[in-house]
Length: 180
Image 1 (cartoon, rainbow, N blue to C red):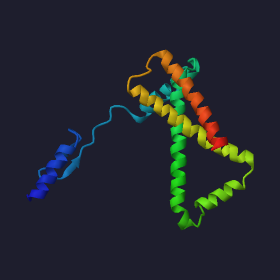
Image 2: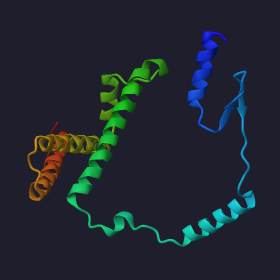
Image 3: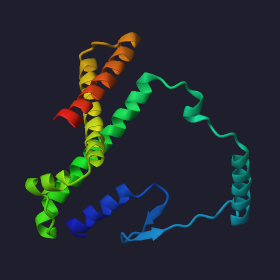
Image 4: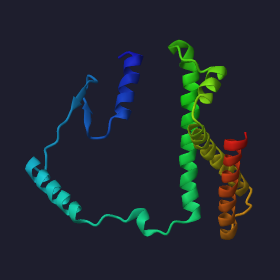
């Protein structure tokens, strides 16, 4: 037997689960089929009984039984705003890269002219939709960095820090929307 074939046979023996395959003397795989211990009809009957029992089980109340707390609300909101910011960044970045090929005009003068033509309400709404997730995620990220240094880990400090994040998010978002 050649060396590559012997190596291949050894790998097959190592990779196959014990008892499921058997090698003949020539090194070829022969599949074994074991006798079934239950019939298909019995399995279907058991599965249908289990399915009926599952329908009668109570549904877990999940989040509805818990009092909303600052920590888990802000944690979930941080994840959601991170997803929003990242999605917006990647969609705009890929659009900007694909614009010359697709004939889109995403150059700065074109974007400024397009936004200047929008009604004031649309401009304010668009700026807030961009500013709030960005500032919330950024400021709460700084809060997490402070926690990484072991500061502000008491319950009172965590709640106070949460309100500080909300206040700074509101202030910075309004600043970016109306003054910047």
